[in-house]
Length: 392
Ligand SMILES: [Zn+2]
Image (cartoon, rainbow, N blue to C red; front, side, top):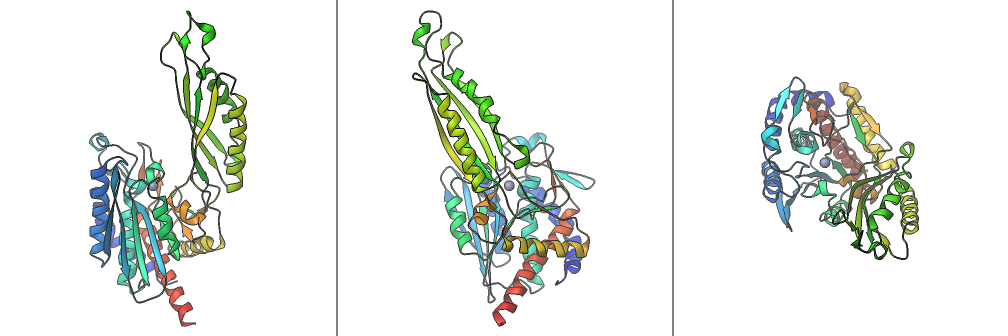
């Protein structure tokens, strides 16, 4: 192991600067639909990377902020990809009532954990490993996605194309409480159920009507009953829309359904079950249709991803940083695309984060030191192992 302890000392010296950078970035409001704020975030990251010799490539995304891929070519072996995102779940105006603040060992503010902290940590991790002469890869590529919190619908192909050229993908979602890193993730589905019946005045023309709301109301408890928490299978009806007026039999209704499954097989089986139930509530006069699909594929744990975690675990032990491997996670991230392609991938490299994506979201300030040191160690170990392998 190169020097997790030495890196820890360097990160301890950098803590105030990193916090100031995170404060600056939290001050840039960047909800996924905030074109200007998301673009400013990408530019902020790009500016920091250009100081480290990265070449910047911004790409406009229709009705979203600019995304960035920055690359630094070197003389060594191995192609390292760092994967982060510029958007947050918080719309413009959130900051006014919820500014960046530090209370003891916790920092809060919109996106502080997901993922302002991770972006700042990654920029520092590359810089520290490079300054130690331990990051002269064939190339380091840093991707900043602009629509991750929407499920990356406009970026998936772009992420996958870059991931296919990489030897490893390091992803910047925050660490889970207690120091969790991800080496697998479940599938995430964004489905819709649409019902079409017939409208009619409930008093004047009752028999002419066919209620779309009624059929979907029957369906909701049936599909939610497919939830098996112990297996990570979840069906949640998050939105139920339908009808036009109290006295009108509703001719249309729609469900927005979130679905989770841990493996590709479980996802397929769950979708089949839902399709069966959807078909069963259709009648001669009310059509019911399942739409949408899986926005994040299941990423199964591989030996190569586990090997990345082993480096992280060894470095963490050396400096007594809390660390554990998360398995059986129902949530997805951009790492899911890369892991599902079979590219060695690890996620959760950002600071430790509590209550992610809620108004209680905080990061553990002191975790920036330990996890920064571990991040730099991971980069330098990958570099070192690859140079040694090349020498034969
Ligand atoms: Zn995120």
